Length: 215
Ligand code: SAH
Image (cartoon, rainbow, N blue to C red; front, side, top):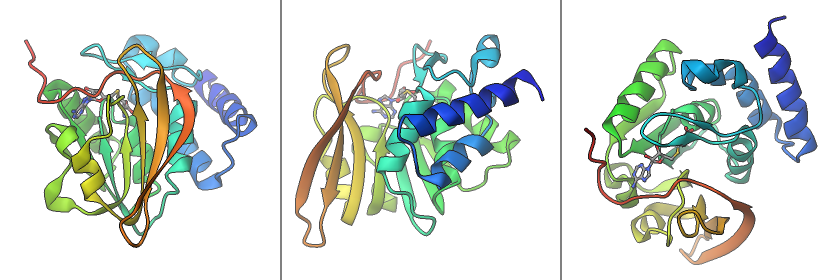
């Protein structure tokens, strides 16, 4: 067994200990090669339970946080899901194993293109991703029964709440950049009534409005 495979098993055990009990989520973590999404210099650390830097000053989230947010989203293989913040593409790849179709938005062209390349290489064909401002959501594809935001918003973006369908769930970190942030679960009932629940404290890169200016 190579070093990565042994580390992957250790990581899966650790996630279980930390409360990730959804076997479909654990199986997605097992099947998606995280090493394909991290920069070459960090490949040997791909299965450590830590966030790692990707380009443009962004990060690929800690595996526990990816697993936790995914579990809290209650994946449904018949549903489509909207992700804000494609970044490396890892979270989208995990979602691709658990939903019928994934829509993912990234504001950095370079990250968007790199993620597309990896999805193709791994032959993942049920992710539709675009360059855009995720704050605005994806109107043409709304409503979504499931929305996951992987950057910290100062406030919950109103367009995303609008695009959440009835009986829908949104998982979103909220709080100031570099400050105390909390993952919220926002649900809409079948009358369109909104409820909000605080889950766990986290540290995410900020959700920034508008496209990124790249040099
Ligand atoms: N889900 C990613 C996490 C990347 S970090 C992964 O698995 O690797 C968060 C990402 O959100 C960054 O790439 C950042 O550029 C992006 N982001 C921040 N604000 C955004 C916005 N308004 N629209 C789209 N993407 C945004």
